[in-house]
Image (tube, rainbow, N blue to C red; front, side):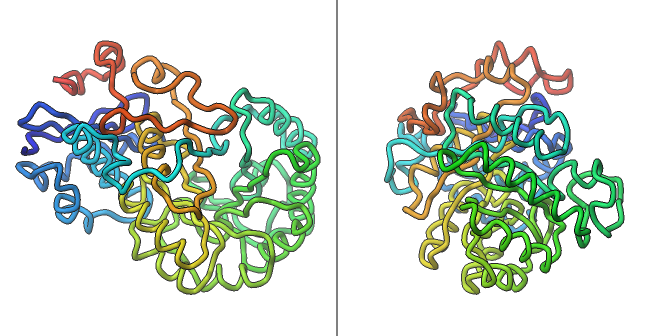
Length: 396
């Protein structure tokens, strides 16, 4: 079998990868819906993989893996890898989890980091109200993650939040020492959310990046009695092209609150210092950024050897990304906690993808399906209605 083409179309903001073969088998991958600008980056890899056997996934990946980088520049490589596994599973008439060593669980736990309701404001009462609404969601999530600090609108809406300069651009560029007022406000909002959830639902906190080490230590110690699931991406994280494991080690050694990072990290090599220095308690690689699902599984195995837990990221990965997360999560070792459940954006995505259970999530779990490949397919007639004119031949 040989790869005959690599295509990329933008569907609802998501770069979608389609790989075709001379055997008539096709595979799909998807990057986050925040990244429509990645289309030319995906197509850059076309000539590297044409003519290759897509079922030799690792051999194909060796041709392109070194040409990616930290988020967002590992996403194209990652989406291609998903599509290769989709083809390999279909060719073998097996679900992808069988090709990754088989499943160790029949259903996978997910947490809520994407099913959102608009916040009415940035006061503790607003966070409490919002958390109550999320706790009532039909998915009955066991863990809910909320953005605070630099991963929220607090710096914009609270006067004197920090001593840092406001850059006025996106992608979590803010950084600075918090004022006493700003710090106390963050803690008050956490207390308000925790009071709503009690011990029924775990509360995880997406914090930055942008926190200083002293502030992060203060925060971790301030919430030690609240049984917070984790503090995520305080020092580095989203769109940060480096790790700073030594700073995370200082933080983790100072507190009993679990410390988490990793969504932006590309490839196993960049997780190595986090593990070998015991720098964090939990890592959250994203299969759409790390280099694909096999790369994520390798990192999970190595993390387990070091007593580090796994809570994979996935908020913007879409429905193809969801299928990839289900397949790989079924195979992960018992350091697995839960993955971040991605929702479809826009909602019409649910009408163009076939094969998902209904409902998808029941009591915070997704049952692992057994269909070949990633186990989901496009309704091409319905999907074609949402293609831009320049992408009209995507399914041809």
